[in-house]
Length: 364
Image 1 (tube, helix red, strand yellow):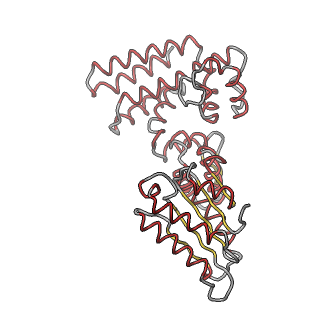
Image 2 (image 1 turned 180 degrees about the vertical axis):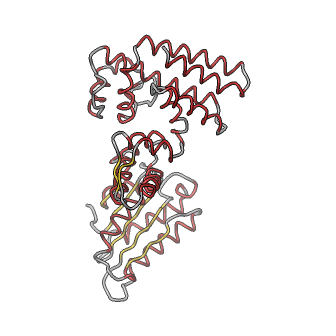
Image 3 (image 1 turned 45 degrees about the horizontal axis):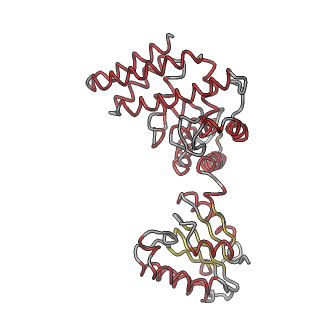
């Protein structure tokens, strides 16, 4: 039976877990208005002794009356030992968690909030939490890209700004849909707009947001397929001026071209139009229809268009009308030629190789 006084927030992204836990803590804090009736305990443990101490502190906090009587609100924040790392797998930690079940099952007027990341979902304590707490598993309930969108839009609303058409998807691509960065970059863009607010546009994101993580080559590849030769040449210059390598950029262009080829085939086959809104449901229906062509439909790879983020595919779908299937296949051959040139020529010539490739592509 679930315990309404015990809530657990689990997930794989510490920022998302912390945000959700803070939301619940703030809600519960309304029932504990006195500062002395609320306590936040750092749940990070490097050793078994740390885990034992943290759980002992939590027990002491819940069994000690508030200064003005009544129970207490305790948040075990950023617990990192409910997993299979060295500390979490130690018998001493398992024994301490087993012992903690006793006071967690009889909290009385007190409430306990546990936020944990990362976790091992086969851990015995996680299974106990599933039956004995109000458990939120954010990895199951909300994928990272969905969390990115929600957090960015919430932040924009708080700052009095809004995302223009396609801008949020562009930001996701540029920073790899990283939730925490999405919040920080949205705040930065809102500050740039000023107190009067306004609209965050794709151009602002191009000018003000640096590439990050999976988006490390995003602008150069966006510009390459945009149909705007001047932007493509400028983006290639910026890429190599920043000292970035040629081969990862080449791989990014090849991956995007593979996806465009597959989308073009779907359009030519009448299963999509360049004006369709690429939703998750639509993508899943198409994936089920063509599942026989893929060994592992769950593996995320550019060889399987249906394994991709629907926001990202929605952006690419709009580009399909600029390229015929023949032109995209020819471009794949040109990318192979460019790879051979990159291997054969010194780094000083790599920018020229990509510029020539862009000119060839845009003049086709």
